[in-house]
Length: 187
Ligand SMILES: Cc1cc2nc3c(=O)[nH]c(=O)nc-3n(C[C@H](O)[C@H](O)[C@H](O)COP(=O)(O)O)c2cc1C
Image 1 (cartoon, rainbow, N blue to C red):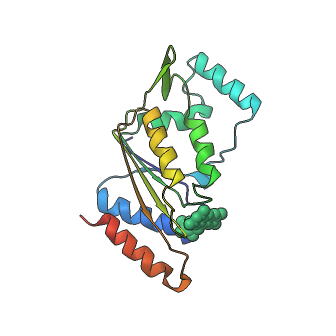
Image 2: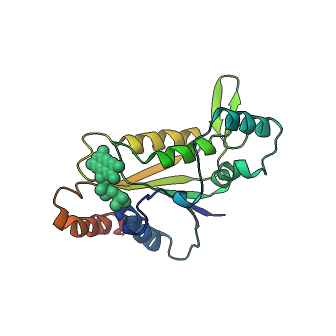
């Protein structure tokens, strides 16, 4: 699998971030058939204590084909990753955090050598796309977190694009969104 698309656009078809994602994929990867994960449809739940124990046991046994480790496997094997998520509460929807929780798997996506950790993912780049209702006020915590996690997973390049201020004048939202999309996908 070459291109993994992680779609955390909770509002589905009406999502501006989904529109940005669709335009971005068409412009940057016109010939690629990506593997798209619509997180809404993935049945992801926060890990409870028993889930953590089970996950750790599977990883300790090297049972990497288990369905519980599917997202970690997909992330490890992708050659390129595009993540799309709206700007929620200065960050992103918790659904994306739950997804990352499932992807953090020692032995599959992350490894330890003493106290040092390094990433096992094969992707050369992660791209993060988001749209925001207002200004990001000096720092997009969602971008910062994903940038850090790309490093944890061993993905050397991280790039992020966001469109701000979409909700300030509701009547102009679509116009500003389309202008932002044009700015981002321009060659
Ligand atoms: C639950 C929720 C939280 C939000 N939090 C913020 C925020 O902290 N800052 C901001 O500028 N906009 C915030 N917004 C507005 C969204 O970022 C904005 O409408 C964005 O374009 C939504 O993307 P979507 O159309 O892909 O769902 C929030 C919207 C929702 C629904």
